[in-house]
Image 1 (cartoon, helix red, strand yellow):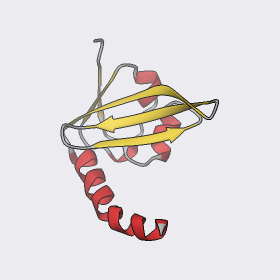
Image 2 (cartoon, helix red, strand yellow; image 1 turned 90 degrees about the vertical axis):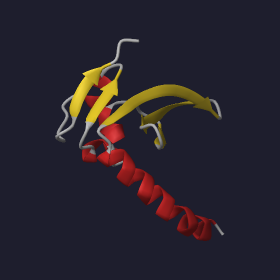
Image 3 (cartoon, rainbow, N blue to C red; image 1 turned 30 degrees about the vertical axis):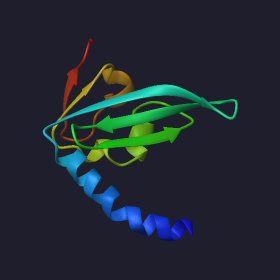
Image 4 (cartoon, rainbow, N blue to C red; image 1 turned 45 degrees about the horizontal axis):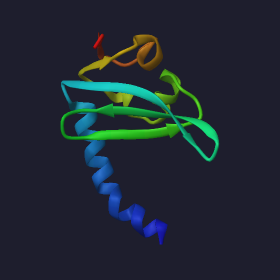
Length: 100
C-alpha cells in the first residue's frame, strides 16, 4: 500500500525539487521539534510555491546536504545562520544572511 502511495507522489516530489533547485531565490531554516520523547530537527528549504521538509536527529549543513536539495541549488539562498545551514558551501549557490 505504501509503495503505491510513493509511486503516486513521486512525480510531484520530483517537480517540486526541480522548482526548488532552479529558483533564483530560496530560504533555508531548521527548527527543533519533539516527538515520542525525542529531539529532532526539521530542515526546510522553500520558495514561494514549493517547500521541502526533512526530519533528522541532527542539525546542520551536512544533514541538509543529505536531503539532496541544498547542494543542487543554483540561485541565492537566504538563511538566518550561514554556519548552520550553509557553512562550507560546495555548490555554486549565492548566500545571503537574514537578520529579521
